[in-house]
Amino acid sequence: MIDEIMSYLQEARERPVFQQIPEEISIRLKEPLPVEPQGAEKACDDFLNNVLRVYQTMNVHPRFWGWVVGTGTPMGMLADMLASGMNHNVEAAYTIPYQIETKVLDWLKEMLAYPKEAGGLLVSGASMANLIGLTIARNTMAKFDMRQEGLQKAECKMTLYGSEEMHSCIQKSVEMLGLGNKALRRIPVNTDYEIDIKALENEIRKDRDSGCQPFCVIGNAGTVNTGAFDDLNAVAEICAKENLWFHVDGAFGAWVALSPDLSHLASGIKKADSLAFDLHKWMYMPYGVGCILVKRREDQLRAFSLVPEYLRHDEKAPVWFSDYGIELSRGFRALKVWMSIKEHGVKKYGRLIQQNVDQARYLAKLIDESPMLKITAPVRSNIVCFRYTPSKYDEHSLKELNEKIMYQLAFSGAAVVSSTTISGKYTLRVAIVNHRTTRKDLEFLVKEATRLGNALDRAT
Ligand SMILES: Cc1ncc(COP(=O)(O)O)c(C=O)c1O
Image 1 (cartoon, protein in one colour):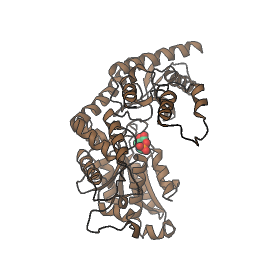
Image 2: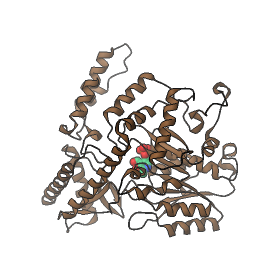
Image 3: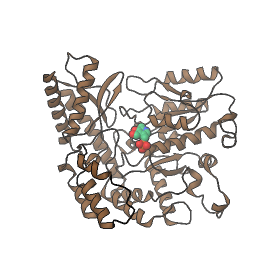
Image 4: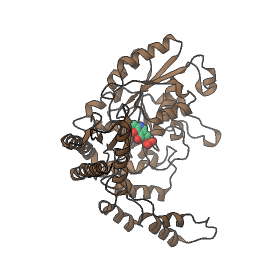
């Protein structure tokens, strides 16, 4: 199994980045529930023959740039294997895995210049981290005991704020927290897709005047559409002035903190009351590992701590991880973080992140030089939005044409990019959180997108 997966990783570049699922595999996978044992060898062979040897390479490929999807490393993979082998439930403070997760949290705080004494927890990803952060925000800022009374007790509507470019997981969190999507105020952005600070202040004032209770602002450190950064220092200032919780969604973008060129964009992160980010995106670790950090550990404990009789433990010992979040049983996801950071060291991560930023700038330059391709949003960090633009096309035809380019890039196995709509324009989108990408890959993308665009244009 190890030999096979090592070859898979080693040969990733030679394989197509994407291919449709072969019909016969779909048929074979529809097998009935195995009631009698099939044996380990058959289970393994079925995986090799129906999955690994025939499956599209996807995000371990150097030319995968869709959505914001991480790439993983061999060390991360092997650490996951060791963690599964130990099968430890990382919970109680008297275990070595607990100490490793605690150490990892300390390292992450140091890497992101976040206060040392902050609380934190590793979770499955940034969606979960945002949910935990916003739960703590809601409970801490409520004017009553939220855990006892729930939102039923609220005398006025609790409202929170973020830019129109917020990730959809924030809306999901707000819905799950019983606040309702309408309480999440979407503030317009400026031409760089950063939150409009004046509009934010106005909206907060308007809500106060109409009897609402504004309680939280969500700052974006790297928006999913364009990789834009809100002015986090300005947002922090408003939060301090207005007595609001400052939460930062830094799913991938928090890591510009390690980039020599862009670390200033993350300078406001240390002011956040809570910070959500991923390790499985721009830290190149295998799925799924994200993190929530909370400036005042007591706020996190107040929101989550619950010790029933059957979990009672030494009260003088450090608090168990279940008191910091939702999960009781939790795997040893800290191991891959610990081993990866030890293997590579922080400086190398900084170089890789800077490399991706430089690659995004290089791609933007290639697009600028190309007569038929056009950049559709400012390139702030690692995301490049562009499209093929023959002059005679209206918006609807441009969408159709570029959608076809995206699918043909993928179905030919050349490259995976995704798409979005910004300022009403359909656009292709390249998010580089890939340590295997080279500049040649980006040159190839520009050539292929142009070739496909030309061919499709000629055919219409
Ligand atoms: C800005 C932002 N926030 C949150 C998320 C959700 O993160 P996850 O997929 O790890 O749950 C993403 C995912 O791409 C993102 O880009």
